[in-house]
Image 1 (cartoon, rainbow, N blue to C red):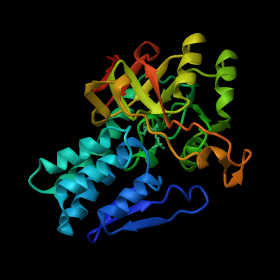
Image 2 (tube, protein in one colour):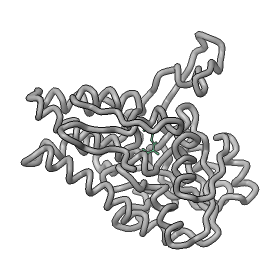
Image 3 (cartoon, protein in one colour):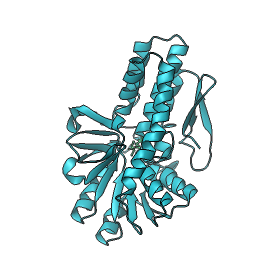
Length: 309
Ligand code: MRU
């Protein structure tokens, strides 16, 4: 099952807001439809929104829209993952936007498999791996980055167990990562975010592997909660890996200079559709953390395992 595909001049996106209860595709016929889908997290995850952005530019071109304006609006849809801007700039610099978007689409799938192969080398038979958010097939076209590594190790016959943080407020861990692991037949346990430290303290976690929205000088941006996991991993001596393709690398900025998306307070005030706090409570809802380089053991890429910079 693909998260994204292009068919008859339209972009089809697996609607991740409905998972795991309903498997339905949203069909986008305009670049504005794709922007809306990115903002509302119908499609989410750094590589997936990059691919969607490339196809959004193809839709803009097919409709004869102003490409500079479309590019600006698409890049603004979500600010933290660098893949959006990377994909938009790449298709704009190419000879054919649609052909380049299709290339990015293919590359994403090959990249994840290469990353999986490199990453599987650090996984031992019997390991328990903790992950945060969803850096799986659903965050990409398919296969996944962090969960791609898990998938590759499983396919090599290694016995592994996965622990997923639920990942409040949008529950990408509970709704998406757990579902993906169950589909693949990989043993998985769900924990609340606050339990990660406790399990590491008890020696129940052998490695942490997460994805990234941006890798830059000084560290990595990833889903809110990643920093607390990294700090606990350091304290209890658990190796902490980030799996990210080169398209997620930003060589121009310090990680501390990037914009961290603040999302709608409603995400925090509600839990799975139910009111979780008194109405009108003041809320902060930063969507991403910055994990400093000194907390990261290695960055698994399609080219091999790198040291953070
Ligand atoms: O807000 P989201 O769900 O788009 O955040 C996604 C993450 O933080 C992922 O861990 C990251 O994009 C890596 S996905 C391969």
